[in-house]
Amino acid sequence: MAFQALPGSHEDTTRSGSTHESTAFGPGSALRILLLNYEYPPLGGGAGIASAALAQRLASRGVIVDVVTSRPAGVRDVERSEGLSCVTVARNLTLFRVWSRRRGIHQAGFFGAGSYLCSAVPVARRLLRRRRYDIVHIYFSLPTGALIPALPLGEIPVVVSLRGSDVPGYDERNAKLVLAHRVLRPLTRWIWRRASRVVPVCDSLGVLARETSPSLEYSVIGNGVDLELFRPGTNGTSRAPSPVRCLAVARLIERKGVSDLLRAWSLLPRGKYFLEIAGEGPQRDALRALAAELNVDADVRFAGPLDREEIAARCRQSDLFVLTPHEEAFGNVFAEAIAAGLPVIGSNIGAIPDLVQNGENGILVAPGNPGAIALAIEELGEDPARRAQMAMRNRARAEEMLSWDSAADRYLSLYAELLGQRAERRVALSR
Image (cartoon, rainbow, N blue to C red; front, side, top):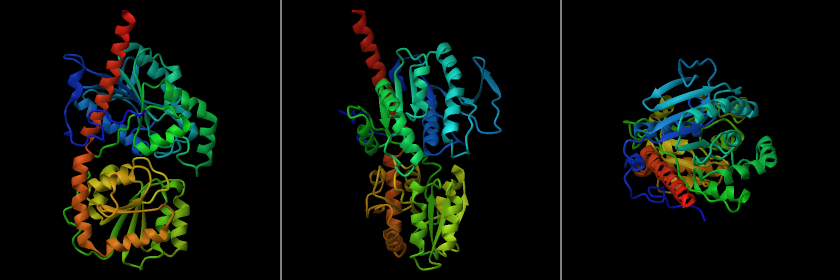
């Protein structure tokens, strides 16, 4: 059975967001975490942001967190620890950045992932031999989980967080990814069996993972949002702006469904709805060409890649968040839009329905349906009072459910459970 009801898990929403459970690991003994992720800001997307946010929250609780991740081009670490180059990000939080041959900020590619593994092995091995870690926490079963066979882990509990693309069947449109999963499926199963606990970011992802490993036990822990950065704007949404300002934030890849948005815009009245698309990716030129072909380029702006502060500012300046991906796990951008008080038009897939209740704080449509997208945009675009109500509901929902402190609590509960199980095994073996 799945471990679905950890104390403080997303199923237990009555609990307050900050309990500082690190005290549960014993007075005078700081919990030490080795976190491995081939993506970490400014590299990568939602999983990089999530691992950084978790690391920062844990460090603020007194947990010592070391992160082995990829080094952005042109960045040099300026400190050394244990003979390794590193940088101290905050008290208790140190990054060890290793070389990798990435395609770009948001694209690793197979060479980028593979080169990270090769570079990370000696660094992680040295850290594990010289420092006492209580937990090794890995983001992505592949590629990052492939480090496990090469590391001297001993009895250290290993947590593997699933993010979406590392689960077979998640993105059937990506032929290279489908082939890679087919070839590496035995390794994926082994990684999940070796892990002390597998943690999908939403239950639908755990259900999908069980198609590969039917006996998989997992715990669901969702992401949080920086509620101070992503907050409602002061201009409000009760007025009727012209045009209605819509925002989409996504990597420009096929499964994000940005082409469906452009086709939906071709069905809308010209000049009444404006769409800004923030993001970069291999489909950029094709999507620009499609916008011109559909004659919507006057109503659509490609903003390119934006940093977190710029995206938060765009949210405060917008009236609707619109994105209808074909596959999605948790969907950080949806959570951020909700925290900013934006009514959401999204797909009825993955964890999006967990965040967006159809008709209450947004509208859900089937992916790949431009007509339904256009109708939803007009339904909310013509009703500024309803948008204002949705905005208030969304901010309240974010404050209740999407605090990173709550996510940190859930992970600390999981760490405590795994360490307790290890202690019980040791006692049993000593008898």
